Length: 263
Image (cartoon, rainbow, N blue to C red; front, side):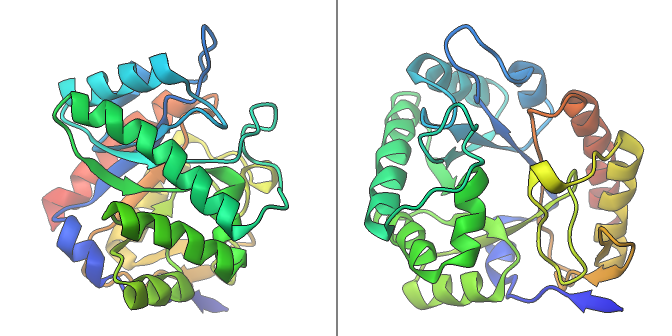
């Protein structure tokens, strides 16, 4: 069986001239750290910065922004549910209005830190369960896109025809990404972290090259999934909170650089 992911990639070509690596950072709290943020920041092209709800705080946010400026990394907001204990990965019953308010609140805080450093907000990308909730519920999807529209920035998300279509209808640019350190189902749906297999660096390296060279990936049950990105480059995303995150990202950097050399 060969499943296909659908959804336009036109806006990707507007923002991406090459394949780029994106990572979620700044997800610690106070003296607690989740990832080697500075080491990762040196390697990546784009950072999604936690904004204080599922992780992060005002000190961490400022430090992440300053690091991003130092290493010339683009910054997007990474708003999530106010659920530190569950790391923003547990289901919440929440209204579209409250989702809109949460996204504006968190993104606004990060935007202020960026402006003090002379930087611009690159995009909004929901975190964890909010990322999945957007794909399940069109009212939640609309709430996130409305926040992005009012802040005049793109949204980053998984390849999804409904998401891409609604973004286009609302006049919001939609930048599509591919997670390479967790699994996909045969019908092209992302598997939540808690349900996904752990991927070692070699698998991640091979997944990236396969995605770029064949426009496909292998599903959780070993079936081919066609991505339909065509010749357009796209974002390749990895988590920073995995035990092998730094090694995963180093290997991903090598694979992505190889893809860009072959373009």
